[in-house]
Image (cartoon, rainbow, N blue to C red; front, side, top):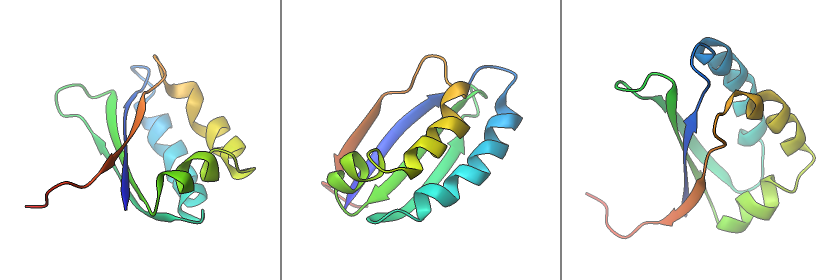
Length: 98
């Protein structure tokens, strides 16, 4: 299993709109082959920063799988206009569990 990690820097003042859009967008990603689960958390210290963690069966399920799918266009339409700057996405493999 792979963990996708992204800090989402939402334009200040647009947090409520982002959270509403994400509520719709999460159904898109959850329907994708290889999707396992996700969490979206909001920073306490920086209220316009969000942490998105998505578990995938493999990196390929995310990219090119999800990112190459027709559904990704709707995800992008719903969410990408909220970010400044655009987030960096990385994938992690588990080394230790506590």
